Figure (tube, rainbow, N blue to C red):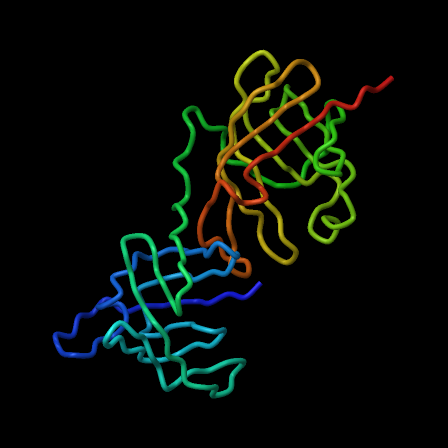
Length: 235
């Protein structure tokens, strides 16, 4: 997946050319295109990341953005220039539209206490979740991995916490879920949901979107936005 990182200054130049932040007027935060490409905007350093390059002193003139000092992997790279347009929460660069991702969702009412660790001794009953087996314990309000699927094993081990909150079968379920990525800290985000009968649990919440390890936004289209669990009957 190709990503473009954008850092903008907030100063305004009242001439024909201006630094990008003055003309673009883009809000800080992460932006995503329909094909999954990203921009993320932060008002600092007079630097813009486009086409995988860090470009210094970007200039916007006549609906185009350009920079002649662009760096990649520690080396001076090519110049960057292209169409640039901002309409509210939508940035268009070279004809591709990037929509701003929501900021971190507000905490749910009556949130669970902040966890002291994301690794516990898994207790409760076994459930299947997205190819992994987890243990859900209403007494502690914790869902933790018992056997992670192969693709998760570099970042998830036995006892890694997936959810912490209110987990009683006869009440609405709400709390904090945790998304994991190899080499990165866990990314917490609020979720809520309910049991459908005794053997199905579904939780929903705008999941984190990362640039590297940094969480740049939250989206209902994140792969972490819907968590489904199916009870495994045990002897």
